[in-house]
Image (cartoon, rainbow over all chains, first blue to last red; front, side):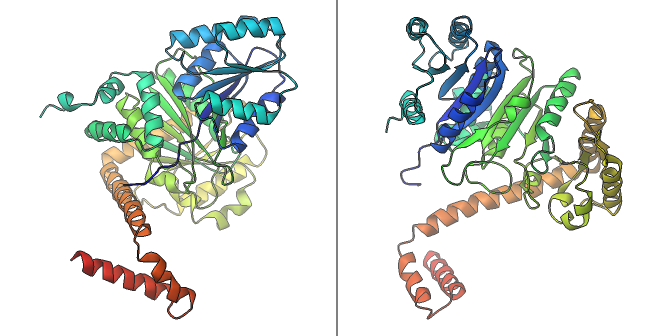
Length: 138
Length: 318
């Protein structure tokens, strides 16, 4: 009998909904999560809400990170949350990175987004938060 | 007997085509969960008929793009198809970035496609440890065709042959000069050669070199390895690539080689599973530290220590 098995890695989907092409932030976060030992499914640019929700389901991820800099967050993120609920993925915590005004951030939190990171956020903070959201607070 | 009654509910959900159950069971297989193992036991009698098509080849030759093109083609023929895309785990952090999905473009509401990314988690050979189990889950869920993308292969990442019924080795122009030196390893496992990026100069040369290599015979004397030129940017050659794969699958059936290949693969699988148990058992043997000492002091050599250990254990068991 294998004694005290190692915990399996956290699986996280990183995707960019919407039409802006600024994927540097998403890539930097993907790398940081990789270096923290997570399996990052990088879905990349210009993903539709449907494709993101599909990927989260097929990849059976523990958390979903969305990067958005186009200003369309109030249209796209609620749509993704709604689809996730419909597809029985509502339990998967979602965090968001990008330029999100405070008022919108409050709204998004109310809709169920678990964490929001603006331009000043440190990678350490994001990694810590991702672990906590995946139920692996250190 | 009625297997349906003894079926774990998760196995039934899987067979009924519940995609979420499939996704969770894949995670369970990757993590070696007891629940997933139970399901794998239950579904095993229902598996073994899928076409498992492996794509192997060096980094950046276009394996993901080819799979994307094949997905669309196979769907246009009305067949269900799944993709397992393997990328490496970091030897430092254990983490990974699984980026093959980015090239796979498909209507999100098509239930005839299922895509899953896997990390190697330290397993060598170009695949993840649980690849076989995952492929069986996909088959049980109704995916009769599974495309397996290996990590970008080096010359000896040939484990795909232990999983796939048809192995496609993907190359690009200007690897041609390497043909002779690369012959052992990756070049030996091909059931189909694919020269991708054939819109680039040098494609004809690469194709000729491979055709010549193929004409010298392959591991299976009854099969002449075809060479197909493809380009995913034009695109061209995709139906031809699929025809070559189909031809090989049909050859396996008509020649009786399918069973032979399956016997070879399962023998290897059982051996590897038994080996990992033996090794786990051995590594917990309390006599091990004491056996290292005389070797450390250079009184006896490692081979002698291992042989004595083995003999004593055999006697102890008898």
